[in-house]
Image (cartoon, rainbow, N blue to C red):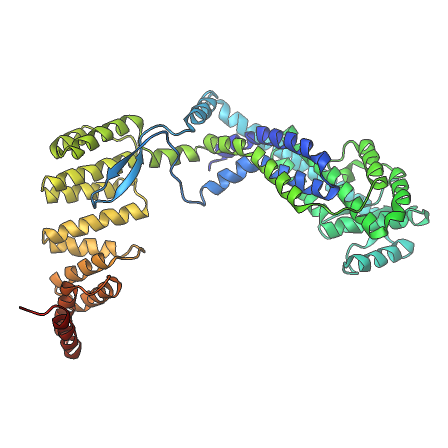
Length: 523
């Protein structure tokens, strides 16, 4: 994926984020605070679905697109394959994507890239500035060795956290306590130790650490910087930040007990304003404080329902699916995948005509039709050359049939299984024509494939090696053919007897002769 592909794909996060935001806002009132976090995390994932799908498209095998109609094509080895001949169902979206990209003048593409990089640079600079302001607060702070540290020690033990984790530092500033850093530090005002709500504040910040909320906030901050032009995604992160606070409050209240609901709500109501560097995405702090107070007073300690979480997450992820599909189209990956595995419309019509002629046993007419086709893609060429090979085979022109099969191989339109089938056809035709140099070359290529070999094919390989006077090489294939075939076969037993004789295994040859004569007495 090119850099411009990434920019077009990123643009698709706007409708994806909008759909996810709408779905999450509708579901959030029906979920507990803890499930609210999972809900908005799912919305975050759905917003990034276009980028994730495009990046992952290159890691999974390409799949053939669904089509309105298809036709059964007989390949050269007699196998049947469904070949799509109509435009994909996604063709309207493909056309829209192509129109969108082509409508932008080429001269503007560098400008768009520069604007994106400029915005990314500004966001990175903003993040560095905020980190610098936090470091200034930390440098001005001192380690607390009094009441706050004792409270933190007690709550670390209560929450199962290491005692060396998240030291408390105090600073002479009008702030609320907050956690900062990958290696977390609790930064609090130096007046907190004298207040009645000190324990609730320390418990709240340590609960954030136990829940991994600071790590999740930093992930959201990074993702928001990458798609800085997407205001809906920033709205999702704001709702997720609020949900983390509500869920953290619920966990602390569970630990404190129901009788602490009112004191804890009063502690929230008395919070001092936090500096901008510590608020993350919480831009509407007053409204959030009111929500937290109301949630604390009405807290029941009820556990979230797993089914509700699954259904909510699924709904959110589905909301991002259409935009993810559009992003794949915009990136060009699905366009290329569809073109390589789907016959173009004009070629498909001619293939149908050739198939009808072949079904009527008029193979020369089928060949004439196929010779007029001008393939539009590697997959077109692959299918057309295979059908030519089949028609030439029916016309007893084996050398030309082999040439057509070889042209199908070099077309670049075959997958691994299709290449194996074509190589098998070339091998068998070369053996029939007693072209042993071609047999050797085809056999070497054929044995490189990692596909299970049938008993019939294994015996054919053994016979090929026999024709090349390579008896040791032939023997394992003849033995395998006998092992996997359904019941004994006279020709296989005779082949094994001969190979044992030629390889100096007289006892095995005698035993094989006795088995053969017992099962198939000679007249």
